[in-house]
Length: 382
Image (cartoon, rainbow, N blue to C red; front, side, top):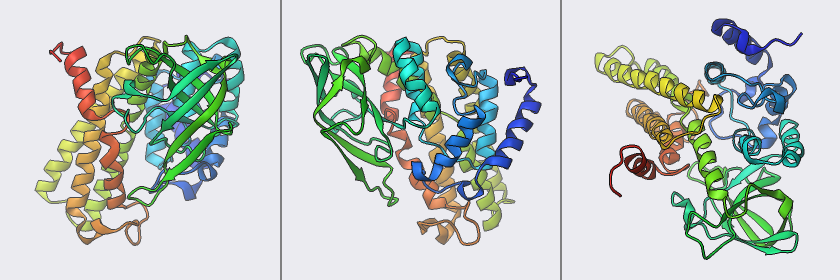
């Protein structure tokens, strides 16, 4: 008989998750210093899929776990505790929810099972060289031609596009409309003729991000999600989902645990001044967890996210930076290493610091998030 995990009390559920993760997660993938590629994390992806734990927030009828908000938080906490790496998850956290809410029955039948099976690995075609945080200024075009769209343009900072075989894409289908209008949402196979992917090597010497170029790429119109020229509404909702993910306590929680480990190694853990700073960070962490649970619960109930979800991304990313700033302050000469500290691969102060730097920029810069909050939550003039 299948057990509904939502029926378990929280401690039993936590123990169930912990035992299974310890027994099944590859030891060599714990706490990776960089974002893993598909070739490295697919073993874990398939283990989650086989267990039925790949998509915690998806409804059970679509192959997900159907977990309530509280259980999803516990699952994330246990993954974080064990140092579980992030998978190639754009299909899980963005395409799946998009299709469940806005897609046709045929699109759900076509794409959701292939995400669950690991056949489709997705990347996000949003940002452009002149349309990052101001995403509505995007210029990549799609022109109608019979049963197809013909797409031309460029996307940038496309995470793990070099792993993906599909991309979900925002394109401009009505160049004469206001910038928030005339935008359409397309699903595009990455092996389409005319697509070129170029990796971008970052300061960490990693190729996590890419440029993607579209040169007369033909996309069947059946892969249009929602109404033509109405893609901005869906994009905003997906950005809400993304801000929940980017606002997850996972990154800050992991960094805080590494900060304690580093302080103990460097002999500063018992210092009263450090204890005061650490306690302040831990209290901010507790506030973040509570706020994150609130927004996860909104999504779980099926309610629309409001503009106040921007608070989550701002608070998490700035806390992440504060924690890693503290790591660099106490790391001494180890702060200059591009590799983990000798004798403990889980201590990598500079790696955490570098990872935290762009977090306030991607997913919509925190300046943009504050503008959203000022205008749409506080009602301040533009």
